[in-house]
Length: 294
Ligand SMILES: Nc1nc2c(ncn2[C@@H]2O[C@H](COP(=O)(O)OP(=O)(O)OP(=O)(O)O)[C@@H](O)[C@H]2O)c(=O)[nH]1
Ligand SMILES: [Mg+2]
Image (cartoon, rainbow, N blue to C red; front, side, top):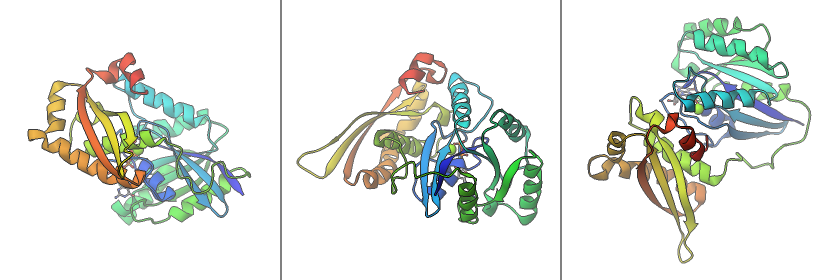
């Protein structure tokens, strides 16, 4: 048996969380087309006959423009110091840029970890693009243990990656009970599902301004129903109006989409009560950030 920790790192939006979910075989991390979706180090557990991989999905590394951004980058740094393997993700369809180069070079600071390069989203690129990316990525470092092109969406080469990652892990017993897919608390998973749902269809700065807090989750005694009370937090009154939508239509859609995912997770029907609150400029306010768990 082999077991250990691997972190997926890279710029925002390159497909780290989608890849985590595809390997785990269950949605443990939310994903979206907007950059900077992931805000926590989320563990996904992959069980194979040859051992257990614990994937730590991380926020995309970027030039921070807010205190939140700074804290997310710091979080990634912390995680990188603790893992057996670091896997840098670069999308097949985009040329390697300064952001990728900076992240690749920064891996020098983590001597203990083995390094792997992953070219993601190959289903969304031509053969020539994939070849070009493989060569660019290969030349980013001299110590890659492997360079692997794959697609989390089509499933192509996922087994190659998990086999390779297991090979690189130290020998040891499983770190989590078999059958467990994540150690995220149910409350946090529900908050993330609501945030993902709220991200759909919003633009510009709004995605970054959304946070979700859970006020209460309680099972009713007399029926197969769980009450979930949550706040969607935004930074400005104008954003609140957008989230709620005309006569509450947008908020209703957000709730319906979220409920469809929360119900299977809890195994009961769900009454979801969403309130939109304004916390002015929370991304830049240390006190508010603390309250929101950053
Ligand atoms: N075509 C295609 N799209 C993908 C693939 N993997 C991810 N995507 C899309 O890329 C976008 C970003 O995916 P995420 O998994 O949220 O990216 P991320 O790297 O976790 O992003 P951050 O959390 O913001 O750092 C989403 O719209 C995904 O659907 C893939 O293999 N193929
Ligand atoms: Mg992510």
